[in-house]
Length: 284
Image (cartoon, rainbow, N blue to C red; front, side, top):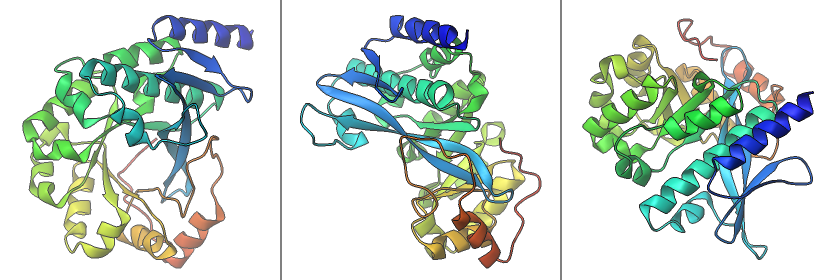
């Protein structure tokens, strides 16, 4: 019965998708854009306090006709026109949703990014098409965290509009911290993001991160330290009071979904003195 339902969902999604979808030999769903086969990989995001997997960030991978591999940015660079960009972005999110929630049975939150050009070209109804896909596979929008690109930080009006639009549809929101928007973050008020993403390298260099973390926690947002490449960065993230941890030191993007805590997280937490995170943050 379960296999029948899954097949029905897959066929329904294919009907509303502009590009061909197929199941690979391992069961993973792939899509086709121009002459490229696209697939998903997922990187674990860890809850620093509970030391468990809180969700996964999704990334697209491409295999052209030859064996070369394009970067995610290389895939989107092929979409020179706005209409094509919208189409391939929806294809990528569709692949991520099916592979994470249905193929890999992901139990956490799915973090998906959007392209800056997409936010500028689509004036209204951000997230509507993706919501329709999620409805077809029986997943609520609250299971998805939309990652707003840092380029949008330069335009507070656009940032407000995009956050408000996605949030009205039930998505959770993550923004990227940049030194240029320290003051602007607090001005978002009721539209303050659910997650503020901070580079691990910035954490070690930026003197004002304590203020940022305090502001984020006061407004009910979680701090996600990303791009953790070394043990030193991981320890600094835990000691700073970060709520969520992500990076290749803790787990690489892969065509699988991590469900267990790696030893690296436990060891880092112990080395950092076992500091507990903000008890008022409830992410998951």
